[in-house]
Length: 559
Image 1 (cartoon, helix red, strand yellow):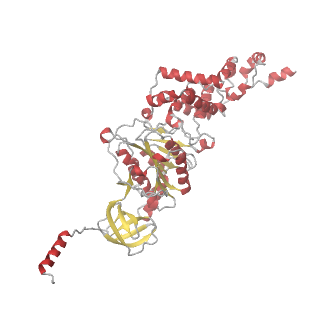
Image 2: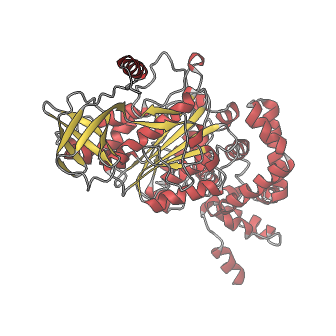
């Protein structure tokens, strides 16, 4: 049987009606030259700044220089196989990364791809890495603390949720340790942490991940890893990617903390890219927009008002200095952008004062607005006392005689310095911090030898946790400080001091009115035994004239 023309027409008509062709438009160009991770592309007339470009073999790039006849793009991946004449397509999308709760507990690269070997990550949303920072109207003042668990920071340089606090210092002074301790201390505090490793070696990144996992902190942390072996564009993108991941939680009404370790290497990567892109170099060969590089990143940290979710994103950038030079180009840029800085000194670190925080030039511009009331009441004058002590301590080597008031100030400063020392990966509960600092600033430790302050603190910590656990909850949750709380704190400290044996030393020193003068050698206070009270009383006048009169009287007795 033959098929009639009518039937053929019906079939064709039906096919045409059912035909649904998706129109795909793409701007296509060709590679002119490639080298040093930079491709010059001819023909991409409609490319956008920062647009994602598709190269052969699933390699992507980012358009940065939009020139009259061509586009210069950085290649985010291996570029050895890319050759002159290869086809390049625009995607119509700005560079973006996956965001969401599925990323928590994972280690990803600057593009949000997993690198921890735990399988693929399925997220529902993506976010551009470059986003305009929230405006002034959408923000609210910083008033909620980020408890770092580090006594020196929580007491004197408080950090608030939504703040940008710079950590600055030479290499090997404990900058990363501060970040890791802060992340570990957020356990159970409903704060999502993002740790961005910028230009570090892979062993260091693996060590941080292992430490966080060991302390149970990886369950609320995202690690964005851009190691030193990766191309400069990925190192450049890493902090923006981490910030975009944190903004997801901020815009969802949650609190997030983003640690950038460190922005010095980020600036180096941007300088390398800019020089390869033939951008005009400026001071120290950095491009002219290097300030904007960091300001547009750190301005995205904010505490939003209730109309915009009430979430927050806190930024802790790190800057590495050379020979403690905080007046260099990148350090001064970031200091002017942030809301304060924590300066770590090499000399303090080598002297065994860790964390090696320089009290004199470290500051938080938020002030005690980001402290709980008990801490602000207890530690109000502590920073001033420590700064004065370090100034006085510089003159003790040349001072022949010191008046009792100066000696007391030096002794108090020694004990406070010892009290603020802290082991790594051992954050301190805020309630315990309040009690310990109260003891140090109110004179309860004046009779404890300096070399026993750490021992006193360790035993006091066990004493409070075992016998006064309710006190810690009262300080952390109620956040009230009144006469009753102060009296309870004093009673608790005095009860422990009786166990520790401080009262015995107080009684012994009460028998010697002049014992305060040679207080610099406090361990010698144990030498006078109960058998020699008369001899000491007889020789009291020489004690006033000389700091160490013991050899003279002993020789007279022998004669």
